[in-house]
Amino acid sequence: MKNLIYLIAFFLGSIQAQTTEKSLFWKISGNGLSAPSYLYGTMHVQDQRVFNFNSNVTDALKSCDVYVMELNMDSVNQLELMSKMMMKDDQSLQDLMSKKKFKLVDTYFKDSLGQSLFLYQKMLPIITGQMISLKNMSQDQEEALDLYFSTLAKENNIPTLGLEKMEDQINALGSIPYKAQAQMLYQATVDACNPQKDNSEMDKMVASYISGDIEALADMSSQFDQKDKKTQEIFMKTMLFDRNSTMANGIEDIVKTKTAFIAVGAAHLGGSKGVIQLLRSKGFVVTAIH
Image 1 (cartoon, helix red, strand yellow):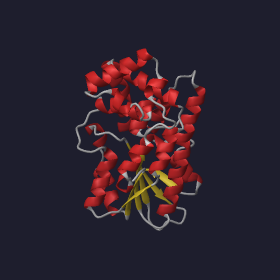
Image 2 (cartoon, one colour):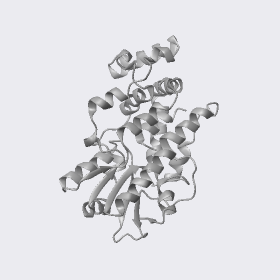
Image 3 (spheres, one colour):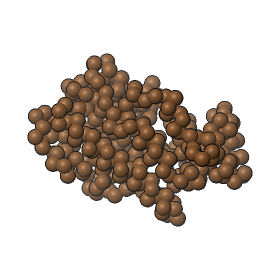
Image 4 (cartoon, one colour):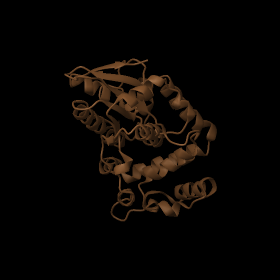
């Protein structure tokens, strides 16, 4: 359960792993395409370590007609986004936690984030938890990796497209039971109070990412609290498998008419229900680039 907050922040995940070549960079060809498109696994972090890629990655982006990411933030109405991030039925965080747990989280927010938890009483707890994850991430770069590519595309007058709609992502988050989300938030707080342990988890993910080991990332994403099978199933279906299918379908439509550089969360690539396998099942040839 403790890894769920990280998974949301990093847009990582795929539970059914299979042997896949280690790489973050893939070429999409075949299936009648006149020119290849490219698929790159990202992490939504500003850690310098994830920016250590070869120039062939940016060369590929600059050669394409469009840049494609999970969600095109330029098309998102920020006010509408905030309204959709709130819990329904007038639920509040205090309704979902014991007084002891709420006090611990509130104290952490005041002492470590300089904010009162009261400001986030109505927000989806899983989103509130991202603030904890972001606080402990390195921020060596001005932008997260996927946004860095987006900026590079704009500088080269390359249009940006999104594979998902904002409502779909928020609805996926909202489908996870509020009580389970509150527990995730509490556990993330407990872990954050132990920086050595917290950083160790993050370093493992970054190390696997840097090595291009999308199957190791898949293994990490399967480390759930085994007592909460129902939440695990909901999370994997709505946040990973359904979204992987949406992404693969969107990619198929785009690459038929345009050359595209596609950047999605790295572990969306791996596994038998990951984007790479879904594209292959559609008849595309997807090969690793080193």
